[in-house]
Image (cartoon, rainbow, N blue to C red):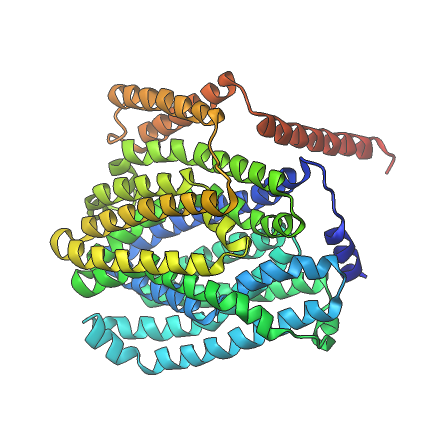
Length: 525
């Protein structure tokens, strides 16, 4: 019964011009607040771990978790992207056999490959720690990390399935809330027992088990698993033909995104890995909205392109790019103006990462300012082009890292990252224009730039009057004033049609819920 209701809901085609933006705003908003909670939790988690085990211990943990995330990208085979690509169309056709076939093939393939990879890493933990990272104390970390690989990989497949059903709140409940709350609580418990970096990774294992169990529960609510297990129409070749180029793309992106930490571990010190990792952890918050709207928009982009809604797709592209830039701009100003006191929260040793944080923040601003161009390329059928982009990005990243890390250490890694992000996102922006004739920028982008300039002046002046370096209260005050001035200026300049449309929808829903509560409170018990 649940499955039928969801399929019917997914297949309803509201072709009004505002429908897709409102759908993306709703899904993106849910994921955004989930990401915000997740990143804030990771920030708090990082502070707890850094202050408990220092830069060296934090570096060991970062190498372990980087190994997990990197190898998870290897074993996924691009299948989460394939699920998001094909599942919405199959749901629209109410083809339960094909829905089951897509999910069966994806879980079976990813589960098998991830188990093999886990066994390899577990068996080679000692030689990898000794010969590759020259850090024998990393061996037990790698063994625990190997257990995380299948748990994380299967979880990514389940999340992609839930995204295909366009029920984004379930991802937030399991991945953003349960996992992070459980991870922090268990980490505090294990650190208090004196387990160090090994205890931190063990907390991840338990939290991922709980997350996967909850994701299975939600998937069963969307479409009963006993029915999906009986479904036998698997078109594995079609699924893999789309997913494998995407897999190679994401595999290269995964290595490219994590290569600095791995090379710092090989060419530098464990402490440098810890400082660099702390700077990246802070900067993740700046990508929260971009990742949220990109995740929510992918099935919508695929659907619009499939049914030929080019005008709506162009509008969606422009709107989501502006929203991404508008959120990241004040975050960029905050992290550059107050980089030292923010890093000092982790501990004094971490203030050496100030130039790293500023450089990475600039790269993230460029990434946000070019919007969802990567998703546009993938979800409109240009997965091979995305692969070529990733190859170029990886080669450029590896070359710059090998050159710059030897000379400038973690600052060289940050410069390499910033340059590659800027170059490749401009390339993707031009590719979207070449193939789709879409350009995301118009005069409405002037408003966030003006608001950012005002916020910069306010932040500079308030930091002179109440230096954020002096205490945590001044830091919080300065950040609050910067964001408030940015928001106030944005409102004074006026909201765009799309912004006003979303605001009106939020007001209507809030008023309806408020009225419902008042009505229910007046009813006799």
